[in-house]
Length: 329
Image (cartoon, rainbow, N blue to C red; front, side, top):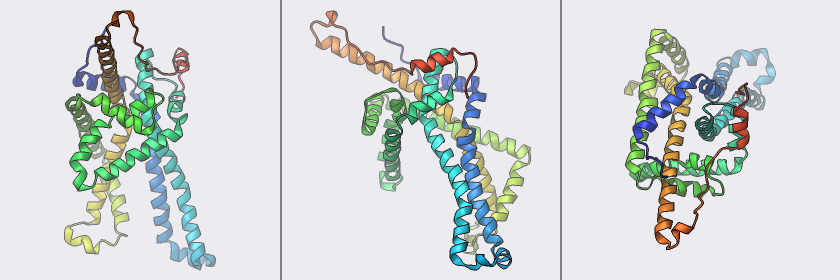
């Protein structure tokens, strides 16, 4: 029996519902991938800034620092801890693109979000293929930001938007095959896919950041953080940019806006992944039904044949763990 084709609006609100019902788990899961990147960057630039500001005093107190190679070595040493934290958090964020798809499938099968480690393994067990997929996506993104390719890049971006869902649920494909499969699923559903992308974009890239900005203003966090960024901006050579009204105060306020934006977009990654997983399931189910119908019509003996479509599914071990009393986060 063919499954009903769900509307974009139903997918959108169902995704928000799943996220809202399990928001404490998703927020906890995204803490390190999001805040770890911010902490890493603060450590990299903060320690470097502190060292450069205090270099002369340190050089007087510790004479070996007068040597250039020693100074360079100290700079590298101060950067490494923050860089390691940033890289690990960034990798975990990339892994989340695939693992949350598996979590969504697990929720739809069991009604629970559970065992994040097992869902991460859906990605980490195929690390090489996943890295190649991201490299290909990165190359495509770099080409798409070239002005002459903007329109073409935007069109193909929509066609390729399900590559991470395809990676998660379909075995035996090459990295290029993930792009082809995504394109085949969205073919004929371009406008609806575009609508879903717009809804998610407005909700997670505009509406929610604006809401958090209001909270920051109410708690006086905006002004406090802006002053900190402004103090740092005073050390920058901004004289050539003053004619464009670029001042330390402007940089401070804009960095606070960017910080709010990054936090909201990072912590709402599950919303987008959930919705795209639901959309993938909807398109994949309908695609399978279309294949079956075509095969039946093209065969004279269709009534005597059984057509097998490879089902998507998550590891049975994950479902078994879902029935345990204690969750693993």
